[in-house]
Length: 69
Ligand code: SF4
Image 1 (cartoon, helix red, strand yellow):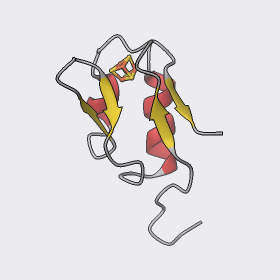
Image 2 (cartoon, helix red, strand yellow):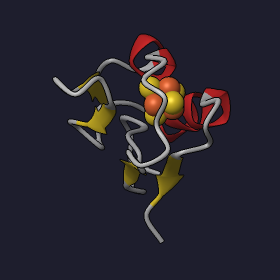
Image 3 (cartoon, rainbow, N blue to C red):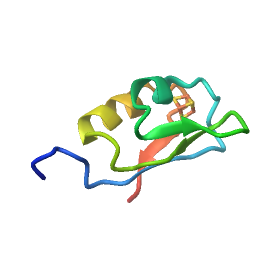
Image 4 (tube, rainbow, N blue to C red):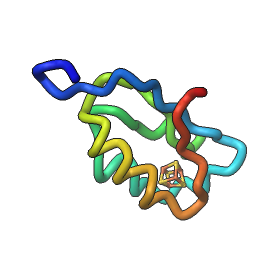
């Protein structure tokens, strides 16, 4: 674990399933943002701790936020 608790894992949004609810952006705006198409995307995979990103992932109603294998 790095001292600043940033995540080593890389998160991505499967936009095919994104409903555009903006929950992930509200929870972790330093990682996710909305595109002009109204879908979420990752703009900084290192923008927050793994814990916070996991919370956003768990809160996604479409289950379309995942860790890259
Ligand atoms: S929480 Fe999930 S469904 Fe909602 S905007 Fe983010 S990726 Fe899309």
